Length: 91
Image (cartoon, rainbow, N blue to C red):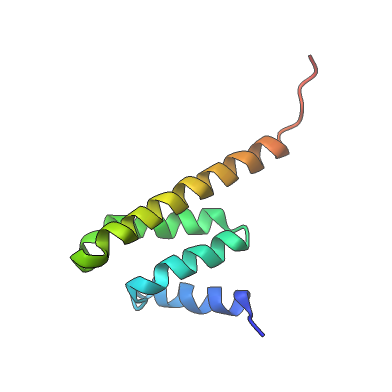
C-alpha cells in the first residue's frame, strides 16, 4: 500500500537536510502536485533551479525542462484555485 503522506514527509526531510538525490526531486514534486500541495512544489522547484549546476550535464537539460513544466502547471493550478475561491461580483 502506497502512503503518499509518508513518502512526502520522508522526501521533504531529505530535501530540507540537503540529502535528497537529484533524481528524487521530480518524484517529490509530482507527489506534492498530485496531493494539491502546489505551493510546496513551487518552493522546491525554485530552490532546485537555483542549484541546477550541481546536477550532471547529461541530465541537466531534461531535469530543468521537467521542473519548468511542473512550475507552469503548479502556477496554473494555483491561479485556477484562486479564481474559483474568489466571490463573483455582481454585474
